[in-house]
Amino acid sequence: MKTINIKGKEYTPVNERILEFHKLYPKGRITTKIISHAEGIIVMMAEVTPDIENEKRYFTGYANEYQADKRSMVNATSYIENCETSAVGRALGLLGIGIETAFASSNEVTGAQNREKLNKDLTCEKCKGPMTYAEKEYSKSHYLVEYCRKCQETLKKKDEAF
Image 1 (cartoon, rainbow, N blue to C red):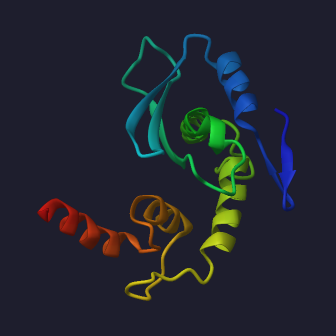
Image 2 (image 1 turned 180 degrees about the vertical axis):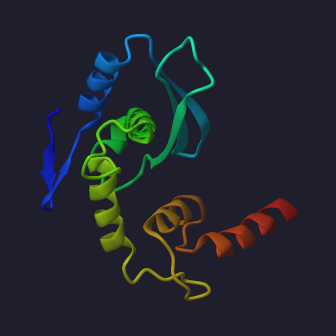
């Protein structure tokens, strides 16, 4: 399988993992399912069954993506597809395909590195505690303030009281 180098480590892209799966398991199946999808955040599950005649042996992978993720040019237009690809890659990884040097997909590694940079030094305007970039963006778009998830909950309760 072809690999790509990211920060000195070789990663097998998901398309290569899928091709390898179909070579190794001609009676196999890959399915995906949306677990939740609301307000630009999606969670998906992929299920990989090596042999459809033995459906008790399967592998699952989960992923989530945020449409307004500023560090992902892909998510602005294709966050659902990106999430599905990541979930499939993780399920194939659990089966053992494409994890010779690393389990995570290249997108996950790059995303984690970018999140680390974006989350650095972010603090909630209300409680002054740490918050993530995703919390900040969600809060700005829904409440016009930069609150952590805990403080956002207090705003939701106030909205429900009216």
